[in-house]
Image (cartoon, rainbow, N blue to C red; front, side, top):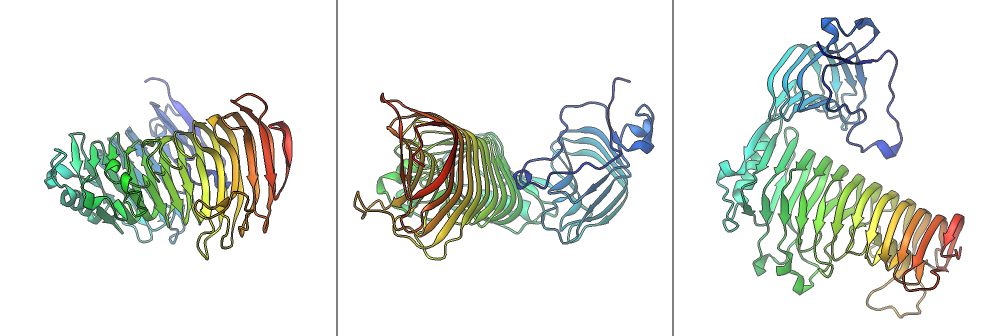
Length: 511
């Protein structure tokens, strides 16, 4: 019979309410296990036939799907209860089956309210699914929704790098979006698919996945050197973009103009609950990715590549959005690896390799009236190599009012970085004199730098140029070790800043 892995749940397992864990991919993950049994104490020994199942357990108030199966075979759910408020917009559904899950049985389920989503949803590659005696009360969801595959080749796409495939991609998107249960838009690994500027929009009838295995190629004609976007996705809930393919933005055709009105390679607007994983973006004309008016979006294992002198090619730009995760990614550009604009809230950046580029920046802020505040930002476990800046906060020298607060930079490696730690409230690239003091009305407070180490290629490794109108408050430096590559000791500068220090301080702190 082979050995069993038995998980007996007699008490309550409680997910952490900490906001740091709101946007993780999973709470409990079980991978690469054979002969698994999950049940309560009433089941008895797992050697008994009915205890080889997921049986007699309850799941309450999931942050996303209660259960998700990917690439799993011969799984039985029996007498399982799922409960979430019927008006809950976050819960994705009861159980989701996808990606070659074979021989799944769901029986004697009591499913009571899974938000505004499906009790059970079935994605592509699922075979031999048996559903019996299920009670479903799912808000606006349906009892059973089956996702379908929409291959752009079937809609006339040609991977020759010359044919305009915009209509084929749009048609595949429409089919997936309108299908009850959602669908997968497949860009196969067959060549280069030229696509002109295209808007893909919802709302859709289920989970939407773009499987990017091939290459999408932006036009290089001069008429496409300006514009708002190349690819724009908006008004979609539950969006997944993954694969081993790439976006090629043809940026070199637009960079010589230095115009600010150049297309963003992928613009995400009003997207709620999304994952962008494993894909690459090369040579965008402006930003590679821009996220606006969205929540709960995760970038994972993303690669962004553009020359170090390419203008304004930010890797990922975020504005008016909350719950954005950026993790395990490599970003090298001609501007900020990641930039956070007004209204960036609850942002978590983890394990990012940045370089070349201008570092990870909050701002610039205060340029326009009524900007939203920025707060609860964490940047951790990341490496900066040869960048202009490391951890940067910047606002316009003469600005409108707003606030930056509750920001943490922790465990960062700086290798030959020009400004490893910098607050620049004198940002004024065109009209300010070199000795002008900042009159910024952007309040910066509660910013912590901890475990920042490595090397600076300028002697000033820590530079706080804060506003003389609203000095920086609550700045904390802990365990800082930044050497100067040019010989001699690194130094720090403090203007209009109040704070405290703990642990090692190299350069010696000016706080």
